[in-house]
Image 1 (spheres, helix red, strand yellow):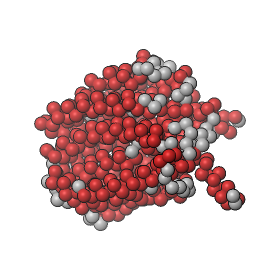
Image 2 (image 1 turned 90 degrees about the horizontal axis):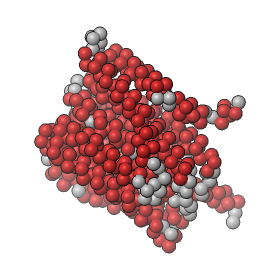
Image 3 (image 1 turned 90 degrees about the vertical axis):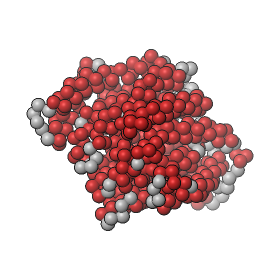
Length: 507
């Protein structure tokens, strides 16, 4: 073997072997989450700014048309991964042959899905009664082939907690997509601007990930021991497919029975409310599954890590969602401008569903990391059945009824789903609920007086000053109650300590 081949093999093997030392796992996972979170914050700022610009250049109808199409695109996108990236991350040891086989499977699935979606374009247009959806659906079907090339490359990066490289790809591609969209919207391309955003960002991300990983797959071999990974991926895929359909059935129903403009208002309220949640749960989930998978044989440390993740998510997402809900009128007026006022009401109705959904995300990470994919699948099926029923009950009352139905279903399911997911795992159900209580109580104690103040507005402040002063007061009061009254300061100190560079901690 030549020196060049040896170097190439060494570069490839570093992504395939389990090189993370268990003793340093917590520090690496926290730093990985901090890098991913920082990149998500930057992405959030970019998206907030671009949304404010595009909302003034485009109409709710434009957003509604894209939302109708992306329901189909998004649903089939679940199958493009086929759960195989989770299999790559969760498996203790993997080989070049196994990942190569999964790469070609993902590529074949991508080609198949692109063909299916483009062929279904006339059906999508007929269902919604919008002829424009034919061309939009065909164009967006290209995203399946584009993304399929980088599924396993991204999984290898997450497996090794290389979130710095992922952040580079995600931020650069997002900036590129946003630039394309704003240019097209300014030049009156309408809804095609949003098509350009999606395709441009997807293409740039795939190119960057391939350049950063530089892993070249070999020929596929079904005898490489990949069948167990396919079964694992199949269970994850089932949950993701059912979960996606449930989370988007509201958009499907509203678009079909209430039209593009109503869907545009609802989709914007939903996406803006969940936007900051994704910046927290996204990076923590990517890191959490990898870290928990390596702790599955150490029950005590597994529970400690999971409880810490719950505390972090609750302490961050609950106040953010409450602020967005309490100040929804001010945010919508300043951010989106005229024509979007109804989204503020929908914002408030989705609040409880958003809070419960955000703090419940770690249940999936728990089950996937333990290989309990059948349980994961069952949990998704039960959740989907009740949520879909709630959507149908609320549909006659328009987008507001659907939003209220979603929050109601989330409240009813909360305790049963948590008990079912956590039972027979290394995690104690009571300890999990205790981990949620400080943030929940703090949010209620501070949120109620803030809500009353904003509604009465005794100082008669305009939207921006009212939001600025009120949000700062809420944040300060919440921090005092959580950190001092509930004595959560040690958790904050631990997080800050581990986020510092090693050299700084040793100084």
